[in-house]
Image (cartoon, rainbow, N blue to C red; front, side):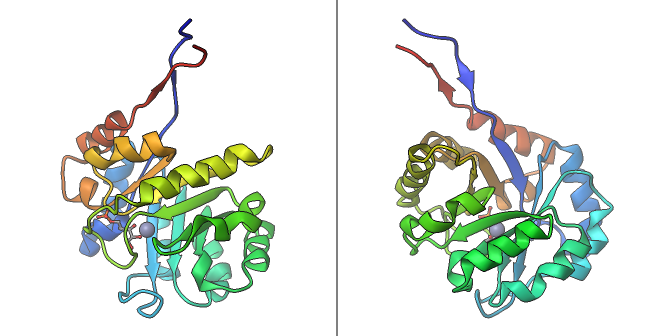
Length: 233
Ligand code: DX5
Ligand code: ZN
């Protein structure tokens, strides 16, 4: 017998990297009005990844332009040295890369104790199994679906299997409740595939900021990601 349809709640997180840097505050307000669930902020140091973006002072300046949560995706070496300033700038979540700190347990513990939500990200070349020991410390696992550093890159299809494996790791251990986020090359076309594989949060830069009006772009992503699950048989 077929049970009632259950629709998973999919969150859309516009990545400001693709926004107009000469008017970031306005971009943040507009994308909030367009229905963003949260805003994704790519902090790069020009060394961990070959690009430089912005840091705590800019985040502090845009904080007042939205009431939705702000998440900082740190693509930096020594992420620990930015934590205090990011918290003070008003971020709600800090996502650190597994590859960026050998003392990941201590780092995530510190973020939690600061009263900020901890997340962990993995590059495409990093196996999901390397997250095994920290899964109970995080609220979010970010599976990078491009090599980080730039917007507008093509989605790497091989990451679908990694998303499924992270979902299986969550299901295998009672008590784990982290969300699975994807970042890079997310468009209405790839959104349905990543959601089917297990993603809960879609980060999208180009697909939103380069495809106005923002409201249509956000709702287009959300609706293409609707996956109906019929429980029971
Ligand atoms: C890439 C960043 C992404 C980027 C995604 O290193 O982490 O957040 O903005 O851009 P799109 O959606 O254009 O692939
Ligand atoms: Zn990002």
